Length: 283
Image (cartoon, rainbow, N blue to C red; front, side):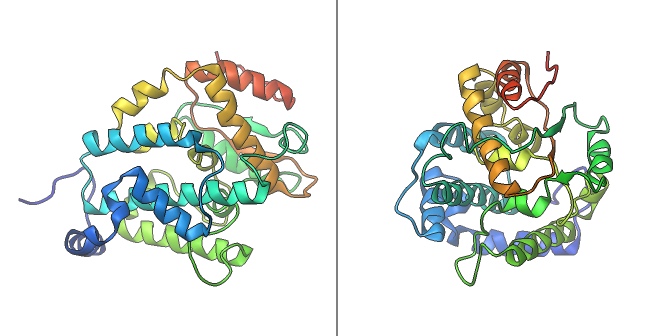
């Protein structure tokens, strides 16, 4: 039976799919079980464990939902496992850098100047507006390569934390994705060295509406809708601390294009935002 789908599958996609059908089981992470992915991330980061284990429940919920509902093929499982492993390495690397789950709160956890956020529904022009604002030399946009690798890449050799290595890894990743699925550029073109939305930073918490936008995971979405204001406050504290880490000593404000925020998240975003002089009506 030939594979049916809304988009064409090129030869590169089919070759990768065949190779993963044959050899994909050699990667324990492709089964999308939290314990295996966590062990892989710990080996990459070279640390004995996570300092903050609160990510485990949301990650477990997401992975279980994807395994049961998403109907991923071997390539989909491999790409999902790679994404989750990268997020886990990011968490570990940030914990090492902060010497704790996050920097001393709140003094070292806010961006030095209030970020400018763009909040909107998908396909309403938020990306275009974000990139227009990011072209202002007085601004400081969040770039794809640093959102993907805020501290280091998942490679276990060389200098994975070097800026040049992180940039090159992002370029390689986007070139690979574009090679496998060229049609994605028509949906949301990504410049690996250019500005990008901040959903990648939120993904490191595993409590994010960015996941249901990219995966079929209805059970996870249902669970996500029950998160409390306290849950979302912790999510955005981690997010803001990561922004502070990325801006370093920059004097220019950071621009962030936010993924859609559900009603249940609105209260906590307003609280967190107010404390960094950010005003947004999310009602």
